[in-house]
Amino acid sequence: MAEATLSLAAPRRAGLWTDAWSRLRRSRAAWLAALALAALVLASLVGPALSAYAVDQVDWTQVALASPPSLDTGHWFGTDANGRDLFVRVWIGTRVSLLVAVLATIVSVVIGVGWGATAGYHGGRLDDWMMRFVDVLYALPYMFFVIILTVVFGRSLVLIFLAIGAVGWLTMARIVRGQSLALRQREFVEAAIALGLPAHTIIFRHVVPNVLGTVIVYATLTVPQVILFESFLSFLGLGVQEPLTSLGRLVAEGALEMETSPWLLLIPSAVLGTILLCLNFLGDGLRDALDPRERR
Amino acid sequence: MSDPSAALLQIERLAVRFGTARGPVQAVEDVSLEVRAGECVAVVGESGSGKTQLLLACLGLLAQNGRASGSVRFEGGELLGASEASLNRVRGTGIGLLSQDPASSLTPHLRIETQLVELLLDRGLASTAEARQRAIAGLREVEIAEPEARLRQYPHELSGGMRQRVALAMALMGRPRLLLADEPTTALDVSVQARILELLARVRDRGLGLLIITHDLGVVAGLADRVAVMYAGRIVEHAPVGQLFATPAHPYTAALLAAVPRVRGGDASGRLAGIEGDPPRPGETAPGCAFAPRCSRANARCAQTRPELRTLPGESDAVACHWPLRAEAALA
Image 1 (tube, each protein chain N blue to C red):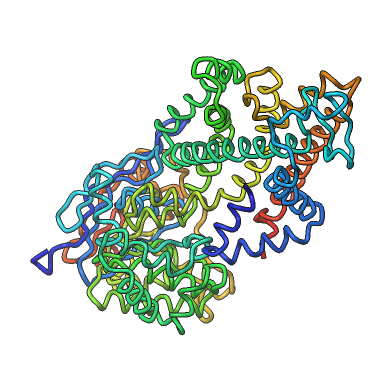
Image 2: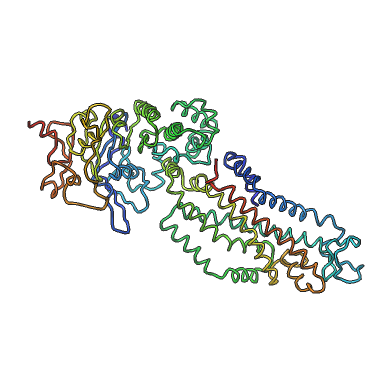
C-alpha cells in the first residue's frame, strides 16, 4: 500500500519523494521489512499455484485428517483438522488478510483525508460540525457497529472492507484536520486564495500533498490494526466465510487444535506476526524518511 | 473603468475589527484611500499599525474572527461582503497579491510551472500550451534567466530573490489591473530589494495600480506617488511623497523620518533617533490622539479629543493632528 502510493506520487514530485525514497533505502530495518513484505505478497500470489491441492480439497489419502508438515506427502505445512492442505490455506489466508487490510485502509484514507482536509481548511462552523460528527462516531462502540453491519447485511468480503474502513477513518480525519488547520495559515495557501482558486483546488493541490507524509505513515500503521481487527472478527466467526479463509481464522482454528497439531497454530501465527512486524518497521522507516526536518 | 482618472480601488471608511476572547480588537479604523491606474500608493506604519489587515480586508482574506465594515470598491464593484464566488472572479485576474515572504508564498511541493499556469488553466483563460508560453513570458518579464529550466524546478531550488520574482510573476499571470504588495522587500537583502523595486516600478509604468504596504521609507521614496502613514489603525497623514519627505505635517511622520539611519548627517552623536515609548496595543482605546503619549507636542486637548483627518488649508496634504508641524511653519 505504502509502496503503491509512493510510486504513484514519485513521477510528479521527484524532488522530495526521491529524497525520502533514498533515505528509506538507507534505513536497514525498513528496507528489510519492505523486502520481506514483498516476498510474502509474492508468496500469497503464487503459493497456492505451487501446491497440488486446492483450498477446499480434503485429502483422504492420509492416515489422519490432521497430518504434520512433510515433504513426502506434498503437504509442506501439513493439513488441518479437516484434511485440507495448510500451505495453500495459509497463502490464501494471507491474500485475503492483506486484501482486506489494504482496501479497508484505502477506504479510511480516502474518507479520512477528504473529511479532515475539508474541515481543517474551511475551519469555523463547518469544522465544528464535521468534527463533532467524528466525535459522535468515535463514541459508538466500534466493534458493536461492525457486528451490527455484518449481521444486518450478511457476511461478505466487500462489507468487511467497507465496515472496517468506515470506522477506521476517524483517527485519520483528526490527524489530517489538525495539519490542514495549521497549513491554512501558511502564506502559500493565502497566495492561492488570493489568486482566486476555488476551495477544492486549494485543498487537494496545495494542502493535501503536504499532509501525505503523515498520511502514508499512519496508513502503514493502520494496515496491521485492520489485519488484527479482521482476525478478531474472524475469530468471533463474523469474518470471512468458509471455504475462504484468512490468517485470523486460521489462527483461531489452529488454537483449537494446538495440543494435538501445533503446526496449525504456529505457521499461520508466524506469517501473521511477520506481516505485522514488517509493517510496523516499514511505518517507522517511512516516518523517519518523510520527516520534513530531515529534508535536504 | 471607462474613465481613466476614476479610481481603480476605492477604500472608504474601512474598519477592521477582530472578535477575541478578551473582547473586540479594532485593528483598522476609518481608513479611506484611493488607488488609480498607473499610480503607486504606499501605506507606511510600524508593526501592528493595521496596515496588513487593511490589505487583507480588500481581498476578503481576513482571519475568521475578523469583520470589515465600510466600503472597498474595485472598479466600482463592492468587495466587502461579496460572495466567495464573486471575490474569486476579482482575485488573480483583477487584483494580484504579492506577499511578504518569498520562502513561504510558493507551495513547496509544486513545480514553478504548475503554480504559474494554475490560475490560467483553472479559469479556462488559456490552453495548456498557451499557459506555458505565458508562464515563460511572465518569468522573462521579471528578468529570470532560462525561464524554461526554472519552470521545471521546485521553489526550494531557487534563491530568495528569485523566489520573490517568481511570486511577482505568479501574481501578474492573470494580468490583474491592481497589485497589492505586502512588505514585498522586507525578507530580502538590499541588492535584491532594489531589483524587486525596479520591477514593481515597471509594473506601475505599464498602467497597473499599485498599493504597497511597507515599514521601509526607502521603498516609499523610490516607488510611491502618494503615501498614507498609519498609526494605531488610523491614517494620520496622507500626502504626495515629495511633500511628505520634505515637510512632514504630523509629528509621528516627522519622528519616523528622523528614525531613518543616515550614513552622514543626522544626529551628531551618531546614535539612531528612535521614537520614545511604545505604540498602543491593539484593543487599548483612548478618547484622544493615539500618538499623544509619545508626542512631544501633545497637550491636554490631544489626550481628550481625537483629531480628524483634514486637509490643510491650501495644501494637497491631509493630516490628523491638532498641532501639525507645517501649520506652525506657515505661521512662523
